[in-house]
Image (cartoon, rainbow, N blue to C red; front, side):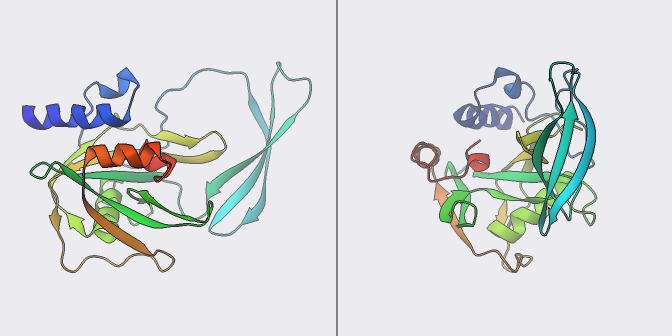
Length: 218
C-alpha cells in the first residue's frame, strides 16, 4: 500500500500543481454520484431565470443572474449534458511494471482535430456509483479492467470542468489493470485508437505540444 501511495503521488506531481490535491489522494474508495462541490465559497449572485435555448446531445442554457455588484441582470450561456445529471469521470491507467500509461486518441469535433486524451465518460442512471461508470469507460475505451483504483479527490466531491460548463468531473487513477479480450462496445459516434506503453515523459511532451485535450492533460 505504501508503494502504491508513493507512486500515486509521483504520478500526480507530473500533472497537478495544487498542493491540496496531493493530500491523501489515494485514500478513498468509490462514492455515489453527487452534486456536491469540491469547495463552496459564499457569494451574492442569484439566478433569476433559466431558459433552454437548444437541446441535442448537449443543451445550451441561458442563465440570468443578479448581484448587488452588478448594475443590471447579466445573461450567460451555459453548457450542460442532456442525458446525464451525475457528472463525468476520467481515468488515468498506469502499468507499474513498464512504468507506462494507456491513453486514447480520437477525433474531437469541437477543435476538428485528432488528439490524445484519457478514457472518460458520463455518469448515467445505469451506473450505481461514479467508480462503476469509470470502470465501464475504461473497459469500453481502453479494453482494460481490474487493477487497483484510487479516487483522486475526496468522496462526494467533483471538480467543475469549465467556467461555462455545468458538468463536474471525478478523476481516477487505476494501477495495473488487465486486458479485456471482449470489452463492452463503445458508443456509435466514437472512433478511438488505444495507445499503450506511453511514458510519463511522452505524456508531458504531448501536453506541452498541445497534442492532448485540456481535461486529459489536467
